[in-house]
Length: 114
Length: 110
Image 1 (cartoon, chains in turn red, blue):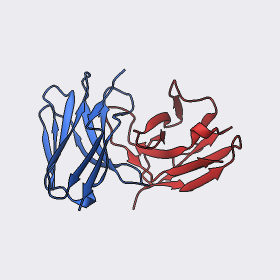
Image 2 (cartoon, rainbow over the protein chains, first blue to last red; image 1 turned 30 degrees about the vertical axis):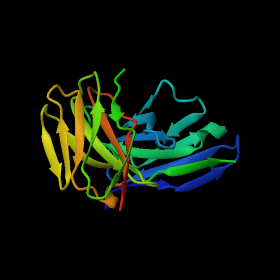
Image 3 (cartoon, one colour; image 1 turned 60 degrees about the vertical axis):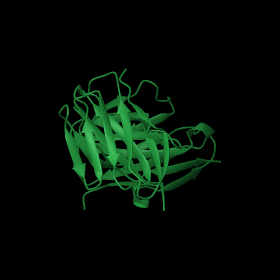
Image 4 (cartoon, helix red, strand yellow; image 1 turned 45 degrees about the vertical axis):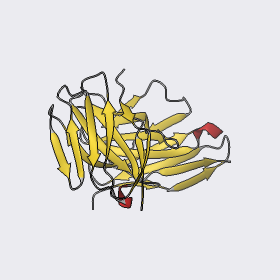
C-alpha cells in the first residue's frame, strides 16, 4: 500500500546532540511537510517542500532544518535539541500545496531529550 | 492570519450517546477537512467538504460545512469506544498549506 513511513518511531537524544528524523513516501506526492505536535495540541507546521522549493514557517526555530534529496525522502535535522523540542514530529505529504489538498500523515517520531 | 477554533476542547461521554463538535473561523475557507488522530499515530483524513452547506456522512459521522464556508460541525451518532481520539479540523485557502484547529479530544467510555 502507498504510504508515508517515518523512522524511527521513537528517538531519544541528549540535550544539544544533533538528531535526524526521516520520512519516506511511496505516494509520489510533490509536497512534503514537517509538523511538531506537543501533547494535546494541534500539529504545528515547521516547513514544507513544494517539489524542491523549501518553505520555512516564520516562527520555526533556527536549529530546525530540513533536506529533501529526492521526491521520496525528506529529513528533519535538529542541530542542538533543547528540552522544549521534545515532541511528536509528523511528516505528511500532499498533491499540490494549496487549495486544501488533503494531507497524508505518517505515524510520527516521538522525540525525547535527556 | 487565519485561525480555526474548535470546541469543546475535551469531551467525555458514555457509549451510545450522541455528540457534536464544532470548528469555527472568521475567515472563509475553500475547503475544510476533518482528521482523527489516535494515540501514537498520525492524523487520518475522514472527510473533505468544499461547498457551502454541504453535508457528508461517513457511517455514524455526519459532517457539515457552513453556508458561508467559515465553520463546520461533526456529529457522531451512538458513539462507540472506537471513536475515541483527537478530532482535528483543517481549512484550506489559496496556495497556502492547511490551517489546523487545536482539536477536540473525545473519550467514549464503555
